Amino acid sequence: MTNPNNATITTVHRAAFTGGDALKIPTLRILKDDGSLYDGAEAPTLDQATALKMYDTMVFTRVLDERMLAAQRQGRISFYMQCLGEEGTTVGSAAALTEHDMIMAQYREQGALRYRGFTLEQFMNQLFSNELDLGKGRQMPVHYGSNAINYMTISSPLGTQIPQASGYAYAQKLRGLDAITLCYFGEGAASEGDFHAGMNMAAVHKAPVIFFCRNNGYAISTPANEQFVGDGIACRGVGYGMKTIRVDGADILAVYQATQMAREHALKHHEPVLIESIAYRLGAHSSSDDPSGYRSKEEEALWRKNDPIARFKAWLLQQGWLDEAADKAKTEQLRVDILDALKVAEKVAKPGIEHLISDVYAEPIPALQQQLDELKQHIRKYPDAYPITAGRFE
Image (cartoon, rainbow, N blue to C red):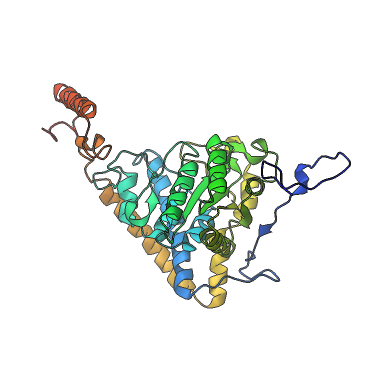
């Protein structure tokens, strides 16, 4: 029996509350810390090449993060955000998609971007905002995007990608595409109104979108227990009538399996799915953050034992798919390659000033052209104040 609001009615005859403890969603775990499987767990079907690509992407992401945070501290780039501790979350989910699926990210998903094929040079060009940057230097560092690999350009304000993902996925369904949209966001972004609007829109219109919440414990400096009282974010998916699953985000096999299931369901039934990944943010929120002000070193040390790369590496060694000596040499070479690419990218010229208004419209509107002309006049008037830009345009 249903009422006019489409809610299923189960009758009772004595008044009683339903509390928040009525729904406790379990966490999927497949891999133990030593690389063995939990009793009763089944590893997803993975071939050696895919598994090694996943591992290499995780290692690349960590080494890139180490090097670029150091570069920010040296004043070579203005800003950086690491995904330390969350490599399994982003790589495992991206590996379960097809190249035709759209990814809408927040700003800690460089692992997904790399798995899709973003090159080291493209990373560096974006981070240095040079003239080879796909975004033409108009975004902060780590705000990546690539039309070629179906990775929507990142936006700084939290949650904007969530309703966009619902709309994009709905269009995929209407066009009959064999593709879905995966939308990443943090548990802090789930406190934004855009989260609820996007979730409800997708549920009502049955859009094939995977909402992937990276619950890493902190929204900048606010711990999860000061953000919400309910059972994490997963219970909200159930509240919106979605299929929902929670995974250990440091277990890349669990993330991969859950995302595979979610994609299959979203595509087959034209419905949204919510995945909540639990993986502690081991690093600072960004290069502008000092986590010692809101959490203890003891807390960080406890979670540091839950390393997604070490866990997956142990599993790969047990499969006989990874040679430890060769892996060490490859990682050291990667450090050299990243530093070399950094040195090249930081010497590339900045984008021409005309790119301030290009791509905003098919053809710049008069108001934008007038503003650009006025800016050029200003620079010509004060060339000493703009030594790099002056003379590069006429």
